[in-house]
Length: 200
Image (tube, rainbow, N blue to C red):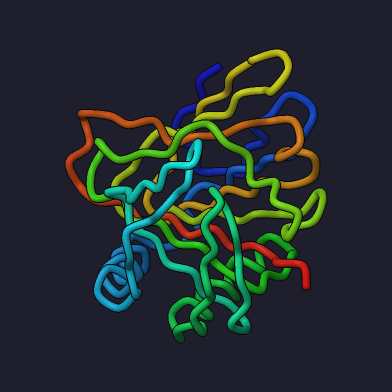
């Protein structure tokens, strides 16, 4: 099932989870400004992962911000949170007002072009708790984003617009995988912000 550009709130998953696409929540000028600010000011570092005992450094870059200097471990690598920038706090407040949820951290990813993506995975680390909300904001290059049910293998694809908001809630992480597929058609960079709540 393919779902294309939307300007209204759209529920994506047919069962076993609640994922809502709000479309753009920022004007194009606001989204452009956030994109330029984050490109220039975020403390980007190449992401790392440990897979089958081997250490990999990705082309994709990442950064981790939060309420305090807590740790977050995924792909067997631990990140230490930096303190919020004013612009991150501003965008967090907007996302919280729309979602009705509160967040204490944000993982940012920078994809330089369409050759960089993210494989199938779930954000189901114990530190995130169960049936939490993850709010994903997309800036820059517009790309497809895919879901796959862990048991039935059913797939859902959404086109994420510049300045848009995607909410993954309820049992989504328990039952669905998601990924950012690579593509040769995209030559511009994309920034993705995922606002989360780390359990103390």
